[in-house]
Length: 189
Image 1: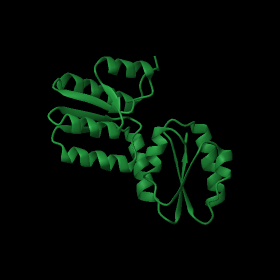
Image 2: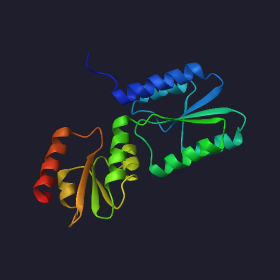
Image 3: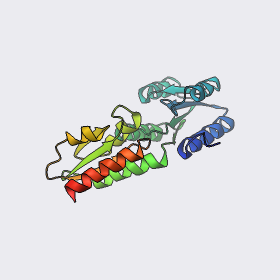
Image 4: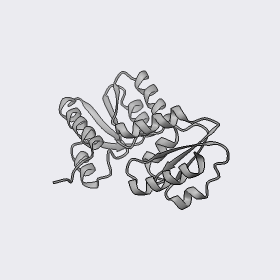
């Protein structure tokens, strides 16, 4: 009874299903896989939704300028630079619509990274360093930044006299995060 989608994925699924039913004259794409679920992504493919990269969508729009295209940004989010590039592409192409389905919790972490980091801070992201959410989040941090996956990895990072700014990938283990937070509080408060 407790299995199912998190709120961010539910929001993305509801939105893409609505896009499918209301945009029969448009080709709909997702930027990467919308979520981490092979069966769900296969169902989208069966409904004609293609997973593409931002370079591929640029070529598709260029090669089919008279068709309507909708690109849905995956729930994990994208880099700050990629977001700017896609917003510019949308602005320049009247037949292209961008729909941002980045999870609201991921967006909150992007905002924390963007607004609270500078050359006097060290941004620390407890995460899987290769995960799309991590790659996107790290692009919003200014100054020195590190992605790490354990307390032991964190201990090897030289923070010096900078202020640590700690965040976590949304799917990380809460108990481990609390241990990491406690460790940093002992050293830097």
